Image 1 (cartoon, rainbow, N blue to C red):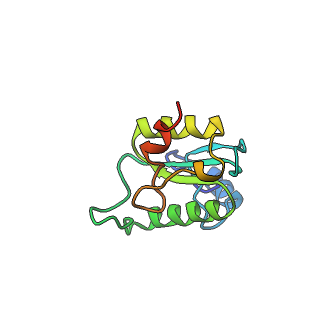
Image 2: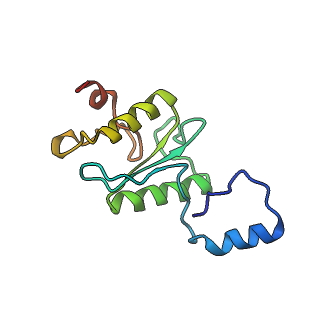
Image 3: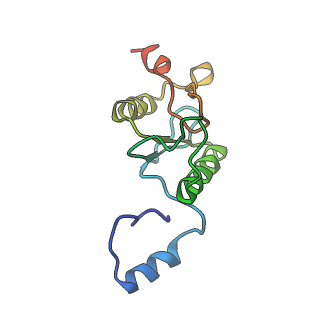
Length: 128
């Protein structure tokens, strides 16, 4: 788990120990819910202050964001719902939607323009 101490100041010994327990190249998302719902094994959310996407819709070239995107893609291939999120209202809706477990078959979340975006408001408003 590589992002587990991203904002912490570590001593040299702590930093060495943390590096030893991390999977190289795996950037652990900020929010993790290990509760299977429907066809998903769990929910992973990488929180951002602002969209990691450029105006043209492409993902930022920032190496850290690219590594996080690779982790999100890996998690999705393994059957987890994983995405970048940067709007608090959508984050709350996503978590609520996920925990309700209301996403079998055609109820699968619709993804916005980018492959890592959050489900559209249509999925949230379709069943109250």
